[in-house]
Length: 110
Image (cartoon, rainbow, N blue to C red; front, side, top):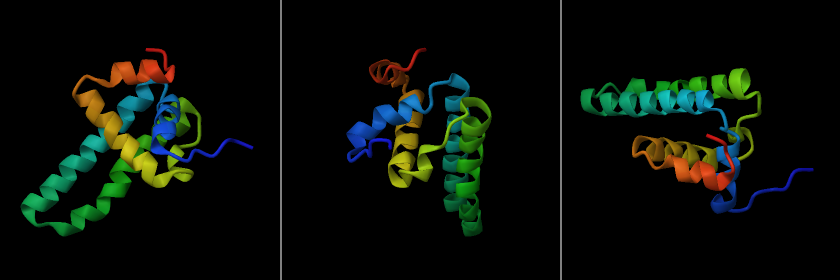
């Protein structure tokens, strides 16, 4: 039986290792960027029904990466809230060009 992670600090390197392939991370970036853009547009335009598309936009690309490229089980199934938090953290670190050291610390080859 796998060890249960009890803190986000312990979860973070696990999450990065589940996203070892650059293509998987790229699909996450695409989905997360789309989520942010759709949310901002919905808020700006007042088209609140667009917010219903957020889970589809985010999870479609992420799960595509896991099932088709990484060939592993998304961390969302076991750690849904930490996974969401980690996805936005990974996306932000990628945007700000600070993800590399985090990948190195988690043992993810670049």
